[in-house]
Amino acid sequence: MDRTAELVARPAAPAIAYDPADRPRSLHVRAARVLEDNWTGSSTVPSRGLYPHQWSWDSAFIAIGLRHLSPLRAQRELETLLDAQWGDGRIPHIVFNPSVPLDAYFPSPDFWRSSTAGRAAGAPRTVQTSGIVQPPVHALAAWLVHRADPGLSRQRGFLARVYPGLAAWHRYLLHRRDLGGGGLASVVHPWEQGMDNSPCWDAPLARVLPAPARSFRRADLDHGAPEDRPTDLDYGRYVRLATDYRDSGYADGEAGGRAGAFAVEDPAFNALLIASEHALAGIAHELGAAGTARHARAERLTGVLVDRLWDPERGMFLCRDVRGGGLIPERSVSGLIPLLLPTLPREITAALVRTARGPHFSLGAATRLVPSYDLLGEAFDPHRYWRGPAWFNTGWLLERGLRTHGERHLADGLRRSVLELADSSGFAEYVDPYTGAACGTADFGWTAALALDLLHGEPSWDTHGTGTTEIKGGDRG
Image 1 (tube, rainbow, N blue to C red):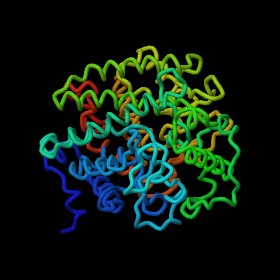
Image 2: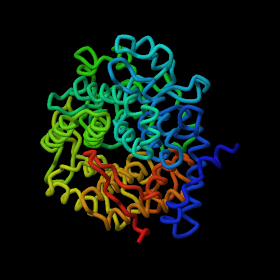
Image 3: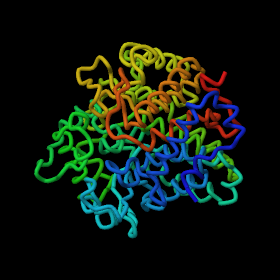
Image 4: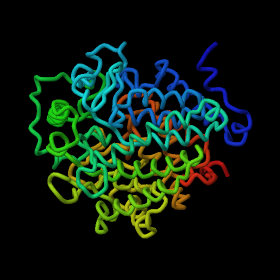
């Protein structure tokens, strides 16, 4: 049987109710084919060439889209990732496929040496991983995947299977990564936050002595234009930070993370942790336990996020440099992502919407999608990775956040832009925020998956586990 044909089959009723023309269905079929082509048999790679392994937050976003095609495969996507979880609770940012040649991606398994260097932290013996993490979208993804087919989920015991690992993951972040002592999780490497070369990292990275260029070979330049990728200087600093963390045994105490040169509290990373904490409350409730303590923790963390990272003058959240002290005065899309949070104070959500619509991001005006960095910033570059281009995962997160706070008109416009640009760009990794021109690699996993999610117009997540709130897309009438 053609497994692609099986995946793209859709229930008749939603197709009739949703698709007013052939074009959206065509987008559905092509997005489904991207996910099928990127499937390895146990998980989905972001792209076959540039990213040939399993990435942590990519798999979470991909599962959110896969739930519309195959809830079973979406469950397996997350289960496969959690199978590589470390004993201390961390979910590594890469799970390596042993059938992929070592030189296909750098840093490769022989750089991270997870099973030996990470032994004290409980790295798995039977699979090779990296030693750093990525943003905690996973509980949110698990909750959405469960709700796509609750019967199948209950039959397989999906939530009971993943809940202990997700709870351990949150404990790790909230306790081991509270490097600033204020209650928020810190990232110890730019790759952990996911926005690798954001200008927000320039000042903290300036303290890092880069590894010599001759000590590593960048496989990413085999698949992407140098002007679209991080610079060699940035990469040298990434390698140095990763090397030092590895040589500390991936420790997050005084001998490891606290002594490192880079530690940053990031608003998007922590907002996703809070949103996932709300989702864990819904999972706990489904499993027969009270979720009130987790909701209370999420609400408390929302207050901490405001206290530590909110900048009223700029009308958005900023990163905090734990080592250097103080907020980092750079505007990035990360500072808008807390719109996801349902208990954010109304005056702050209003300010975030004003900032998103204003000259620094120009949502609904000059830009097709929200840029990753300040349009007026000195470091803005419309093509270089996270220094200006627009990304589909941040577009999806902001669309969800705008709907959470009743900004339907803006959300409808953003949804249309995500779908149009995913279509016209060939599911590009990212795009020029002004023109929508494709950048990076094509047939990118989370671009296809999140377009599918918006295309289906499913109810938004109910973070309090009490029901669903119907969300209708802009062209549903």
